[in-house]
Amino acid sequence: MGKITVTINGSQVSGSDGMTILDAAQEHGIDIPTLCHSPELTPIGACRICVVEVEGSKTLVGACHTPITQGMVIYTHSPKVVETRKVIVELLLASHCGSCFMCDKANVCELRKIAADLEVGLPRFRVKKRYYPIEDVSPYVVRDLSKCILCRRCVRACNEVAKQNVFSVAYRGFDSKVVVDFDQAIDKDVCRDCDVCISFCPTGALSKVKKLGEEKKGKPLVITG
Ligand code: SF4
Ligand code: SF4
Ligand code: FES
Image (cartoon, rainbow, N blue to C red; front, side):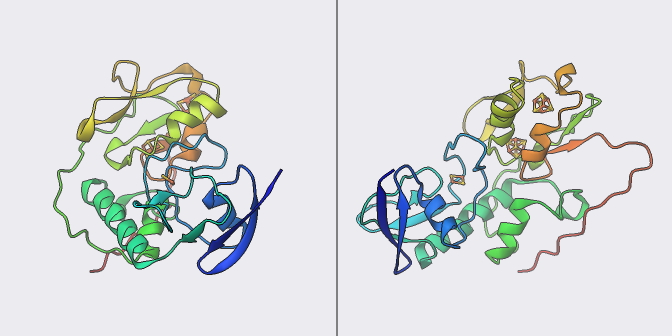
């Protein structure tokens, strides 16, 4: 594999052919937030939270799916990058109608962590919220799509890791939605003893069915601003 030298935030670092900007940054201890990305899944560049500035590029580029090239000059935390990430998180939170106070995944929610890291409090925008009824017909998976950020990690995890094909994405624009069959509630025997999609979901949109007497484990999120 050929060696490639790039400059990240003013420091020269080396990587190899085929590495993405995210790989090179992570290898050198530079943290770039991600939501739709998972190292075990095919990158799709859906969420744009990983954007970085690259000298010579007119637009910000997605670090998780852009390969490094020789001599690339990258800024992972420039003011423009940080402001863009904040807007992305604010828009996600603004359309997210799940209550972080009540969410079992509050402790481990990746969206909540990124919002806290970027010091995003109450969203400045008023956008339409996505309301969906909780789907709890399956004995294995509960879906609360009001908390879904359309990262499609569940779609890819089910397909690439669990080797099933339960989910797809339907509708367009604001109405885009991860669906099962012809937009039916999830209730599949193949989900028995699986849980793969649940472990890949970055928010509280997918969870296991609670057994009788199970306690809530989430900690409340305090939103300031
Ligand atoms: S539980 Fe497994 S089989 Fe069922 S939807 Fe999730 S990943 Fe697919
Ligand atoms: S259900 Fe979870 S994993 Fe699937 S698209 Fe929504 S947020 Fe992503
Ligand atoms: S993490 Fe890169 S586009 Fe979503």
